[in-house]
Image (cartoon, rainbow, N blue to C red; front, side, top):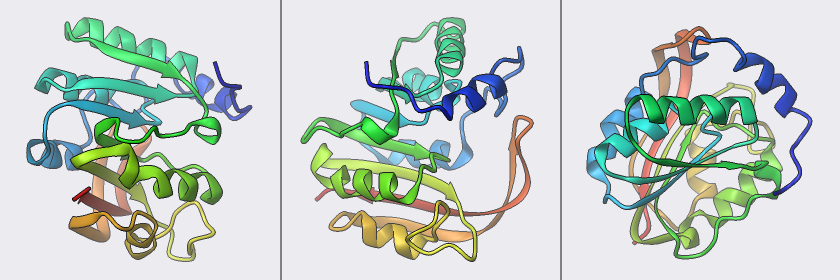
Length: 197
């Protein structure tokens, strides 16, 4: 097992309540995008408490949920058991994670916002980690002052980082989030659906 970043303690505390911090329902952009991608092996980065992984498993995807919070992953497994689906939970720090070539049919990154150097390294691996025809489903928060060196870059920066993937859909703008206790109200986000061709 890879070493776990000290920041996992923050997330362990956030996920320690009985309630699901970001709710039990999948992200609505993921719900929109999922029917447009090929079913197969999915890796969901910074999956947390499992809402997106369980949703995809219910659709028939083979899901690997990655997070560095053991508390979050325990809740993800509990949610999978509740819905009688199977997910694989992997305790790992994105700082040490490498996306193996030609492995995944879908990479999901929903509000996974590591430091820029980690994001750029993983984004550079994205295209090769996907099988031909594989897809990226991405949504992240955007801070207007952030460029490529920040944690919250806009959609233009993200599109450059995932080249040479084909961008099927890209949008940046304010939208209303209603995901548990922490994603509530108006936020500017970047949404991308992209494919390896």
